[in-house]
Image 1 (cartoon, rainbow, N blue to C red):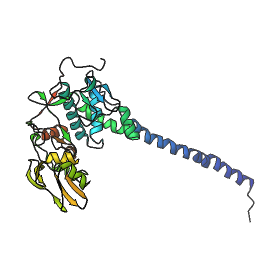
Image 2 (image 1 turned 45 degrees about the vertical axis):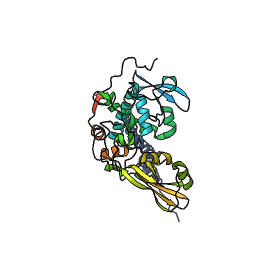
Image 3 (image 1 turned 60 degrees about the vertical axis):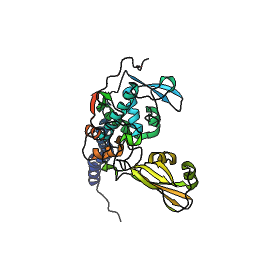
Image 4 (image 1 turned 60 degrees about the horizontal axis):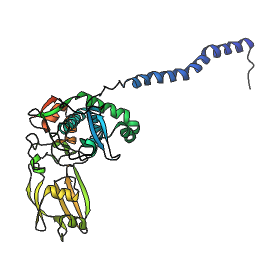
Length: 341
């Protein structure tokens, strides 16, 4: 049963609703939206303008997919190599070390202290693993999607922090080789390539051990192994016998079915990830267990990231993996091609 409200009481109630409650109801949703904008706006403004990587020096790169030569400004080239060769979620100091090695590598090629082979159109390098993998901005945007701005910001900072710097030994650009993951040690250059570089010496690299690529297994059909190596493997169990190991604890020489092989030879013929491996026959397959990923000479990328996690800066990283080197200004030889040519 409803009670009859007096006129004066009714008007007082309406007045309270209109003057007190209604404004609160109207303001609440808009005040919440305004608060959201105020909270997000500073975050949107945090991304400062990226440092300029403009350069007049051009790198003639042979683009393997398009089969043409593309001239790329030096620092833009370095940026594209770092983005392609090292995960962007690595520590900034590791990315700086990668930028320094990438710039050093191309400086050596441009200065003709190394022979890159007869490439079309006067190219200095290809964009493939034959030299250094390179992708341009459009390719990276397609690859990274929405993550492109954040990843490229970090990589650009790494390149800018080392801009114009290279690694030298006796005043010349070094052969700045790098690879993914060590087996706990890097390799002497002469033990893998046969050429001795005083700065490419075996060092311990314990940071690689707890990384995704440190130990892996590959299954290879038995017939493929026998065909590639020219051997017959009859019994199940471990295949071959290690005769000698390198300073970096990789296989220097081994014997399989009475034949002698270099560890590098077996690695390359079977497509193994490392020259530190064991082979085990199991029925009609050979299981290859590898430690590390890559040739093992120079800077380990996962090792560099581990050093960065331990608080080491990029200068300490490169000077650990490349013995006796200096960080110097890059002074290209006169007559080098420019971007506007």
